[in-house]
Picture 1: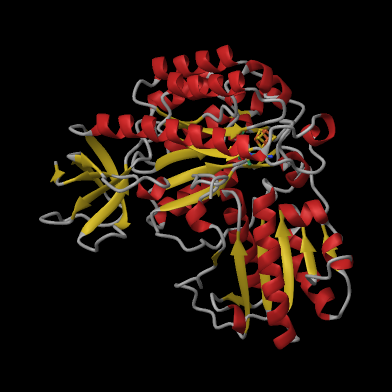
Picture 2: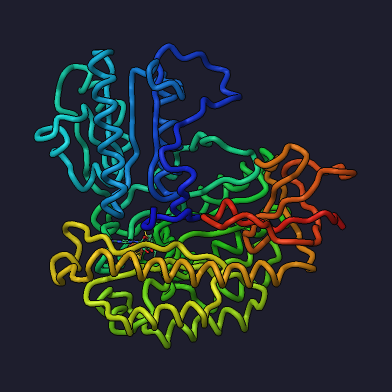
Length: 483
Ligand code: SAM
Ligand code: SF4
């Protein structure tokens, strides 16, 4: 599969993941819900909010879809392929519903927002349609659907952040958790459907974020990832008339870092134009703010970038890379890249490959352009790069990235890193798996070590893994020395 590779924001290994029952939940539930999530990390975090709302209504989670009286699918619209996968699942659920007539099927998230009542009226695939800002109305919508009424709420909001809803952690390892800090996006990148499906940008109340992160730390979590479509434009202003009280992303990062030096802080995802020097200096000042920046370039050609409405040029972007490396020399930089955007020439493509060389990305999330209905690009430009050329260019981008990653991982051999232990390695229960500040996976033997999951350990890297790198999960630094 060429168009999707495992990503931090769009983790291929998690696509279609269903919700594991909350292990320490003392309640017994007579009614069960099943939820499957697709797309970016925001969707997975939203499913945790939905779970919290449904728990309060007396529905407990199940991973067995056949015993569920409510089936939800939390959807993604970013590429056509993502929507096709969801449609296939909905057709399967429709068959299941025919066998268990009382079952209700609901579609949540970006596809619900994009297709609205089409799901109920034309396609008759589902009973409930709920957009990303309307999850609070789920209890009423479930009741309406059970009474045979049309059940839809796709209103977008300028305020909703679900700040007061404590998410029920989805399939957690008890070490790392995602914390939503803002929703929506005000950028109008011409290829992107997000501003239409997730609405205007709004920042969550700073106090509720700090409380959630503090609680997580007290429960034993050791890493939080601050989440949003565009976290760097976080700006919370309780008194909108007085800018003196506004909290910027750099200030929020510092507040979270100060909760404890033992709590690692990451963030995802960002638009390069919003990574300010303040953010970089804050990252450099706190050891527990992880040295890893996702800086999606999308294209290396200034002409294409302008058509994408990215608001920066190739030179500006390269200067930002220089600035990051000057302020945080050990910082890892990762990227998102789109191959074959409208009018892209061979020269534009070569500029993308050369910006990759310049930036020395440790990892990239690489896609070929998929035209999305309603976006600026769909309205303004012809999707005129033939599919075989898009795929060939994407393949060249993937090969370039593999070479860059290989160089980067080889360079790590011989270095010592502070690793946060995530748990048992999937390859062997005799090994631990964890990550360093740069978010690289490190595997090391449990032999003669007294460590536990959630602890930090200094590990000297002796080799990089030998497996063929298909995705992020295959990439690892392997070590036998714990220092
Ligand atoms: N906010 C982030 C930024 O500004 O770069 C990106 C978030 S977007 C949800 C995730 C990635 O999906 C984008 O960076 C882009 O590479 C990819 N993407 C978005 N729309 C796409 C499209 N129409 N075709 C192919 N890839 C797309
Ligand atoms: Fe989409 Fe651009 Fe917003 Fe990222 S910044 S979510 S690519 S519109």
